[in-house]
Length: 348
Image 1: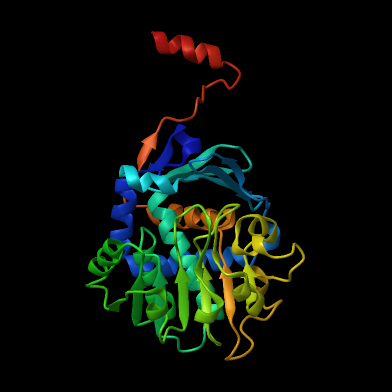
Image 2 (image 1 turned 45 degrees about the vertical axis):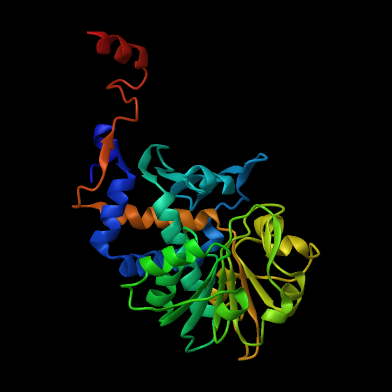
C-alpha cells in the first residue's frame, strides 16, 4: 500500500473493494479478526480520547460523527440512521471513515463503512457474548431480521460457536430473506412466528430493530434466568427495545456510559443506575457473568473505538491486495509555503 507521505496519495477502500476484501479473507475469519482488534483496543481503553458521538437529529433520522485517537492515530466515522429509508429502497445506515497520522495530521486511509460497520457491530456482539453468555451456549434468538441479522448470526457462529439461530421479525419477508441468506452457513435456521417462540431454548437473545421509537420488543415475562441479551437496536435518544423490568433484573454492560445513558436502553433508568464498562471485564478489572442464573445485558449503541479498531484492521489487511484506489486528496507542494505557486503551475 502506498505511503501517503511519499506521494501525497491516500488509499481509499470502496464498497466494491470492501466486499472483495471480506470474501478474500472469509466472512467468519474477518469477524474473528475484527473481534481480536476490538478486544486489543478495549484492553488499552485508557489511552484513547473518548467523547460521545456528535449527533445532528432531525424528524427523519440522525447524522453522527464518531471521533477518537490513541495518541498516535486519529480516526472518525460519519454515519447516519434513517429508519424511513427502507420505504424508499434506501439503506437505513450508511457510513464512511478515516484514519490519520497524529504526528503530521495527514490522512492514511479513507474507507466505506456501511459494510464495515455491519461487520464490526457483529464482531463486537460476538466478542461481548464470548465474555458474558452462558458457557456452551448453542442457540441464539435473532429478534429483528433486517440488514444486521445475518452478520450478527454469523458472528455468533464464528466467535461463540452457536449452532442454531431462531428468527423472528414483524415482517415475515425479512425473516425469509435472512433464512435464505443463511441457508448455506452451516447454522440450523428456524423461522418463528413470534418473539416468544424465537426465544424458546435460546441462551443468547439479540434484538436489532430499526423503528425510531421507545418500543417494547421484549417484555419481562419473556426473559428467564441465565440468558445473555444483546440489545443493539437502541442507538439514539427516544429509541429503546426492552421493557424497564428487564433492565432492573439484569447485570448491565456498556461501552461508554456517557453515551449509552443518552442513547441506549438504559436511558429509561436513573442516571446513577450501576453499569459495568466492557473494557473493565476484558482487562479483568471487573467481573463478567458471575452465575449460571444471572441475566447479562449488553446495552450496545456502538462506540468510536470499535470503528477505529475496524479501520485499523482493514488497513493492516490491504498490503499486497490492490483492493483500494489511490486518491489525490492532499495538496502537497514541493515547497510547503508555496501553495499558490502549486496552483499556478497546474494551469500550465
